[in-house]
Amino acid sequence: MSADTPVRRTTWVLAGTVALTWAAVGVVALGRPDPPPPVAVPAATRVPLLPPASSGPLPSAAGVQRALAAGLTDPALGGAVAVSVVDALSGRVLFERGAARAVTPASTAKLATAVAALTALPSSFRFTTRVVAGATPGEVVLVGGGDASLAGPLTGKGYPRMARLADLATQVRATGLPVTRVLVDDSRYSGPLLGPGWRPEYVTGGDVAPVTALMVDGGRTAPPGSRRPRVADPALAAGRSLAALLGAPAAPVLRGRAGPTASALGSVASPPVSELVEVMLSRSDNDLAEALARAVAVERGLPASFAGAERALAGVLGEPGLPGPAVALRDGSGLSRLARATPAALTQLLSTAVVRDGLAPVLSGLPVAGFDGTLDDRYRGGPAAAAAGVVRAKTGTLNGVGALAGLVRTRSGALLAFALAADGVPFGRTLATQAALDRLAASLSSCGCP
Image (cartoon, rainbow, N blue to C red; front, side, top):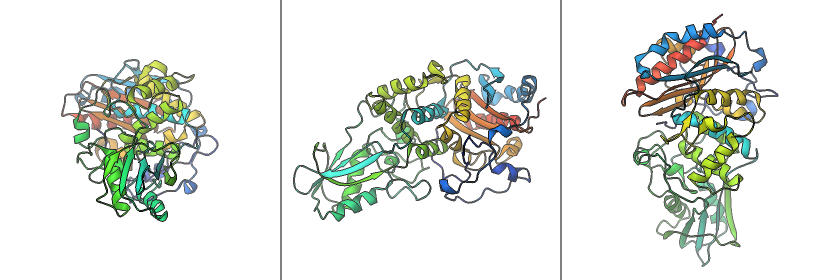
């Protein structure tokens, strides 16, 4: 499973065409230092980098095959690894092994969710959480708009700045309304709280919260990254948090509905969809992935449920230039073992993101090997260490499944998109599989491969 990780430490700028050479490359050439401490990097100050037009000569197909040959025999891959490697600019295939085989994508499925969200939602899209007056004096209604990033005391400050429940409470207190009861309205979503193919331990193990339209701190009971269980009812937990912030911790908190003409008492909005996609990919945030999938469903006029999101994602991914039925998701996060995607579809998504306007956050959201996100503690030693800062990739891990899909600069300067999936790994061997996948990606980074 994926865990949240600290704020990004390396970013790209995407000006005019997409800028794809990462800042860490110059550092790595001098020998990899210890990564810098976490810093917030506002979008306005991101450093412009070289555009993809500066890509060096492509390796040959035979050269890529030679570079990967030894790593593909690693027993840690479980004997069933599927691979796709393409030129990121043109989509030209350089190497395939089982690339058309439908595999369990795990969290690499978030690449498809990201592309669908950026394609279907307006660039101005934000989730909004509101408080309105209730039907009786002293009653307020906390209305969930689907913001899985709504921050409470467990969410630290950083970039991007998330909407905060405390700010919403400040607005409500400013109205002078005495609060005697809090209702929570999470009716925006419908259907089951857990996705098809999910295991109950995903919630008790802290990987994801029950999917509701209202939650604070992702329904966590401890800071992000812990393995503490999520709350069973995130909406009621959010209502209790609001009651405490309003100075009425003993007020009853019940589920209810906001009236259609209820007076507004306050509202807060999430960061825009582009920044949410970056966070979702970098941290492999399952809650945010499910929220974005439902936002796509609402935008397409479908129910905000797992079934509605599945239909909506399939519809967007079936549009021209996207992989269509080669990606068949059952949720937005990739937690479902019923999801399927081919490695060729994942590299198609990545190469499309390189060249298509509006998809740049898919690229800037990819974790940087050895530096941030879910790759923060990988590529730190051994044969893969030389690729620290050079590989950017989305991770995917479930018991028995290891996957890695992203972009890499070769030694000759070519930009490649790759997808690696091992879905026949014995349970309990996923760490060894991750290391084997890292070594495969590192072999691409060191490839001159004429």
